[in-house]
Amino acid sequence: MSVPTTRREAGREVEDPRYRYLKGFQSKRLRDTYDDFASRPKYASACYFFFEEIYSTEDTTDRDESFRKIYGTVQRFLGGEVVESMTRLIELQELTIKLDMRILDVLLEREAPVEFGMETYESAYKLSENYQERVRQIELLEFTLRLIHKISHRFGIGMVLKGLRSACVLLGHTRMVDFLMSGYKAFADLKSIEPLVSAMSQRERERLDRIWALEIP
Image 1 (cartoon, one colour):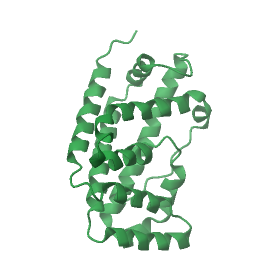
Image 2: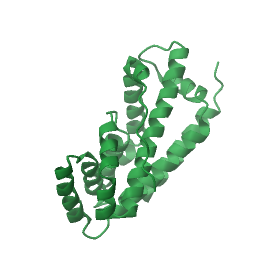
Image 3: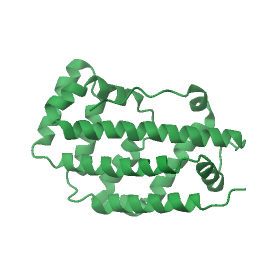
Image 4: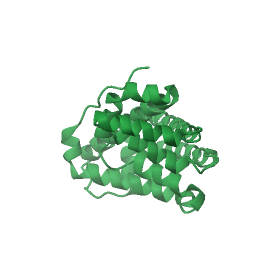
């Protein structure tokens, strides 16, 4: 299994104030869409992990680079499933950045204001013309959440992660292990992730198809 290459930064776009507004806008949209789950104690930690770790508005470049550097150590400690989940997570985040950059390009082409509304956002979303990549994004999200939940229920995984973190401290790369530990804590007490993952899959696919059916002036 190959490790994803380092993502290409798009400095011009990232510096545009619309980019940060776009990230915040999308984060709020996710929170509003899944508030019915986040407001339930049973799913609160899992939703927080989803909002703050997987779809973080912060730059995850350092964390993803940390995984690349400790790839062999993670594989020795935790095996192929964990490596697969981290590889797919990086793929998800690199794809998400690519899709965000495309939306930003459309916003700039259409001279959208820095603080735009839902109509402007959905128009740019459709005009990005990347339906299949959006489907792939949803598939990666489903896969990643299910696998991290499964890993979190491995017997003794908490102790193994602590041992892995100690090894990574010596290597100077702990951010990815901290991410794994956050996932473990978020999902360890959640018996089934399926209601949340199924709702996310259905809602995101329905939203995607609704936007693609819009008539854009």
